[in-house]
Length: 191
Image (cartoon, rainbow, N blue to C red; front, side, top):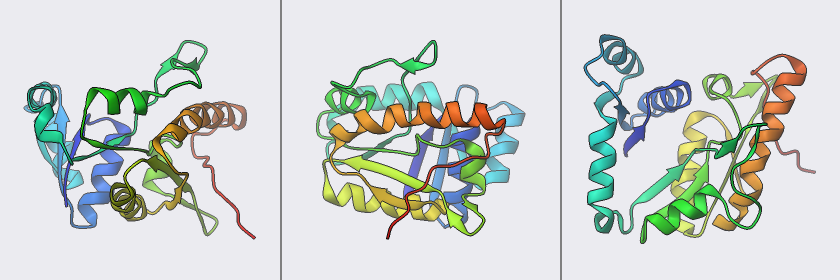
């Protein structure tokens, strides 16, 4: 599968590493794709590099071309505190879907840090990869990408449930601060 990641930071880098290792064609969008550190990082991850600004411009210019394209929203709209930037009546994922008419937006990869993406199994238990979206096929594809990283895919339903997933990241932040480690993860136990 061809995957473009806007951003070459820790989370984007770990996703690129995992997906390239699983045979996906991965490109990182970076502010300066010629930066030797970015080029070296992309090469070490098995990914290509493009200009983030040009990638974003292309997305904005081609909004109609995104019709049917799966867009994975990994972001968290955080205000100082930290607190959610949007409340429980919408989510950043829903707002993104409104801005990208026809795109199949799925919320995922927002409830853990890069450290868990690198090593998603703790004491034999895979961290949960919660996701939601309105398109069944898009959710199925994203579930596969979540599994490719090594997380356990946990489908939490329609995109409106991003209103619940986005604040869940704040619980992860509070927990990681309380225990003094970013190497913590959320999971779902079943009986």
